[in-house]
Amino acid sequence: MPVAWPLQQQRHSSYYFVSFYSCCSLHHEDNGTFLCQGENEHGSDIAILENLVLDKPGVRIDHVRAVGKDALYLNWTVTEWNSPVTDYFLSVSLHFRFSSPSPS
Image (tube, rainbow, N blue to C red; front, side):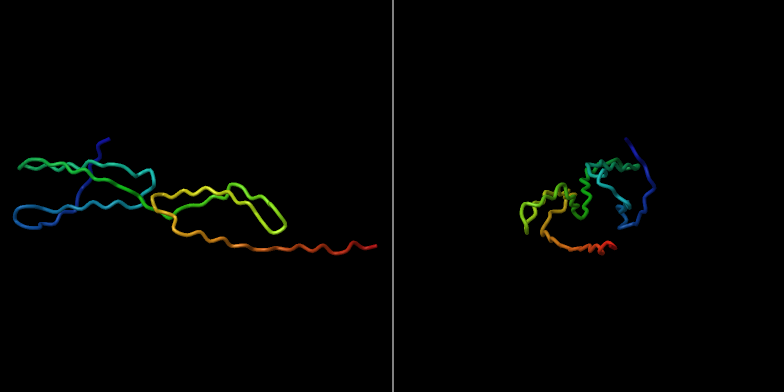
């Protein structure tokens, strides 16, 4: 799908211009190969750009099962989003509920 946009240009010398295009609010679906084509009265040129959107990895807990009095089995899925998982940290929070005695 061809897309055209206005470019911000800076004269770098008397021979060529440098143009910039910035992308904001990228999503994982924006990963891909992009073709950039420039054309003027002197000719045309094409550049191929590889775009890789990085994001922090996501972790989803799929299953937790007690396997003993003091042990749990955890199964999780990691979505890396192109950034490798380097560490895992497990945090445990204990909550106790006490019931009040029923009136006699």
